[in-house]
Length: 316
Length: 259
Image 1 (cartoon, each protein chain N blue to C red):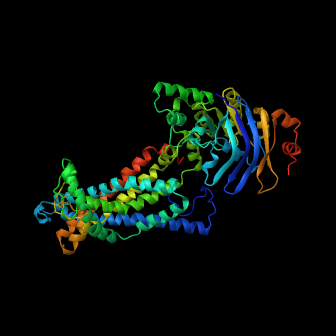
Image 2 (image 1 turned 45 degrees about the vertical axis):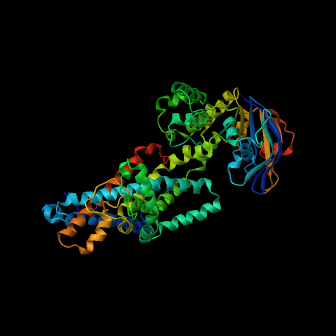
Image 3 (image 1 turned 180 degrees about the horizontal axis):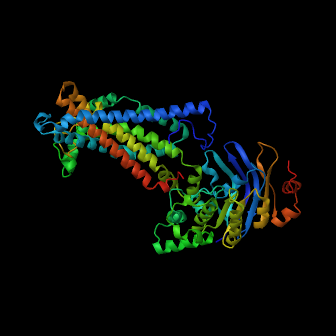
């Protein structure tokens, strides 16, 4: 039944130019390469994490097994990133709105340039800034919150005297992700068609009402996308956290202003890896696998949120 | 309530460039006034200056007087937002809010004006507006679907429903049918004839048959050369403009002997 010659019933093939074939081939190759790299990283993480997962609990650092080791780190990672997003998202959207709809054009161009520049500053610089400048200046604020808002679990205290707290770390991360969220929001806000903005204005909308009717709904998926990119940077940030946060292994607490804090996965790997060997390394890799999975989950959820109202996105 | 618009010595600028010069005209209530003329002659600019949409563009400004039933629309204490709530506008390209449902598009203007409205009253008003735009029967069973799913002609009628839902005094239409097929165009024209009982309608059009079909008054805009401001050459009853215009330029334009 098999034929080596092309069957005669095959439809005539469309003429394809060499250039098209080359371009299609290289584009396909690039796409496949990305998938291969991703699969390679995932495979590495899983394979090297397995020894830690199957090892007896007492041989893992901390002596209580992988989950009790990774759990607090994961908690710290998510908490720091959450603080960063809660602070940076509204601020970034507000800055983007100011740049696109309120600021005079010349000022907007300059400011946008500065914001883009902020995104390019290496994280070690932010870390230094956080520890040398920001942390000491936040100490009085922590004392105040402990005294007046101490009934909230976030501000239970005792207030840190160095300012090296989860809250400081979250703020440093917020400053780091702010330019990302701002830049992407600004991009989508600037793309809102004039037609839609004029539709709102012609109905008698004020500028703020126009923004709420036309700009924010249109830019919604961009805001979410920017926040997710920012979250990616916040989750993976290493050096700034390693510098700013004063950690105690195995802590799980919502207390944001004390000097007893969980570390984050990335910072913990950076601090522990040089002195690790054998099963310790496998445990660190297992924590890396956890970070990988969390990032993946965040992206899937964000995509689902964006797609839930795809009909209303304005893209059709 | 339909209102009368009086315009005197209106000059419209984009920065230093004068786009429209010395327009003086009165627009009658409860009628359709058509503005015709070649591209770039300032018809749309003039139209947008009536509801103060012109000044939305950076550097755009207006000199002269525009009043509606004696109320100065460019007075120092007049908020352009209030002007636009009284003078509705329909654009050349249909522009429903793509992020909103059909229902929310119609209700958008009402929600701006008076937040407190009972759901049943709002439902009734949305239905009435959609009926007024001859769209109700086509969308009644999909009011919560996105407006972007409608055809171009339906979208434009949705925009008309959105504009008339707030009961404006005047309705401005900037080439409302130029992006539509002949059947949708006919639907819009029939709608204008119905709506002029309730509103003052001003329409900009490139389609002279359309101007002749729907309007009572016609204004002809022209510019003497590129870079010169557009001027209102003649303003007369539509019948006179299309049969025996006063100006030679008008006759040349409508008979196709232009330029």
